[in-house]
Image (cartoon, rainbow, N blue to C red; front, side):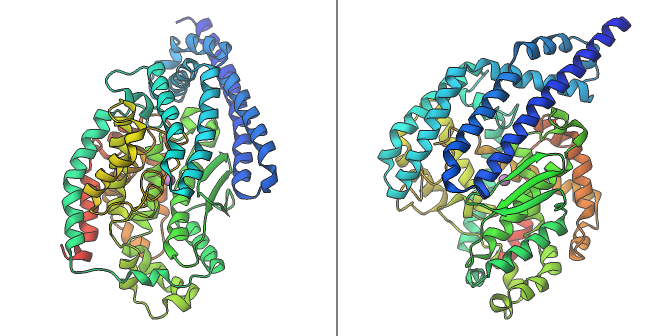
Length: 509
Ligand code: CO
């Protein structure tokens, strides 16, 4: 390659990254508006806010799919910048091209129709859920499924139509690859859960349903989020209805929670969960803001970070050996007479429940596997929208031994299908599997990790995650990242070992 060619592609690369940074900065303004909408905005501002957000979304879509960007990408793809495949330049060119090619396939009309249908769908879902009447939601679910099928056909796929949709959230993953891991997982998980159910040992779960004043909860949860490494000088914690984390940009990551004065775990573990997402966002390389090498890999990997801090750290015995005294001081009315062991078990209570977001570490995965199987069947037209309640109830009964009393406690509990987020659910369980596998490796590399948790020191785990996961951005696709970090392909083994080691002794099995 001549030096001219090399200079030419460097100049094009500079120009491309500047363009990307511009529209990503615009997108970050939208993210801040959206954070505000969900935390502080007065309710009468809703209509104008939708206008602001859709205008920004339109501008971002237009500039990110422009012909100019397409031309620059095709020049760069054959340049020497892509020769070293895991260099920042090569990764950025590869991943921006992938996104560009996907977005280009969807027409503006399609995007608008999807936005409209899912917006109406969410309203209908809310009403249907309140009235416990699936028939209100049914026509919208039919439309959403039809649009998602169309989207999958437009994207294209090799084996399974569902693959095209999974790829939006977990790039490179397929029904076959995830399905195999989930099937092996379920084979071991189901009998393990049965043994827990049948155990004569059960926790005193009412302890955590006492009075936990909201002010004290906020203070205690913030202190713990700070202790595990969420940087409050580069982030905030606020209140919302549906908790989330939003990495606005360098130095600004917003996390949110909601408080239940009579159920300690909701806000506390919710805060640690979102702080885990936040620590990932804060660990990204700010030099590459807006570019793939400075962005999270996939939703599954993102969820592995939140689950790790929430569960593998926050629900661990070493964590509570350090913080239980503080908790007793923060909530003297509720915890003064409660022993550490009883509290620890109460926050690790495993039982069948109807609602996914309230499920424990063991049963949570079964809730996801059920949705994964159903989504795939819907997208492949093996079941119709009208079949959803009956199929849900049948599967639920076989997984959990209990039948939802109505569809609001069953197939209508989650917003995802009304919002067109099909293919999203599996990333939650993948997050658990990735988390366990990463954590096992961290434990090997950092043999004093648990001993340090007991002292309230979490810095070495955070640094390990910064170095092994966060700093890579999208250098490797998720499935490769797991192999690079742990030396093993993704499997259910680390998660099953973790669950057995933790819950076996509690339940005497
Ligand atoms: Co999460």
